[in-house]
Amino acid sequence: IEGINQALQDKNWQDLYKHAHKIKPSIEMIGLPKPLTEALIKMNEYSRNETNLEELVNSSNFFIQSMDEIYNDLKEALIELS
Image (cartoon, rainbow, N blue to C red):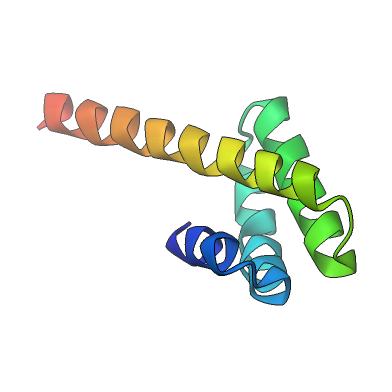
């Protein structure tokens, strides 16, 4: 996620593609909500082709924010289990 965020800030679409493509199988395997997987698919496609850059940025920001929220929720759940 940090790599995606950095590539997004740098507007380095090829790096964004590499990071998004790398995590795609893991994200799909976890079975996250459909809007997140759709955002990741858009990130892959748009960054690879360097098209629809506005939608790429929107999808990337949505994905990063959502993953941050999921990470925080999981972290809290682990603390409660301890």
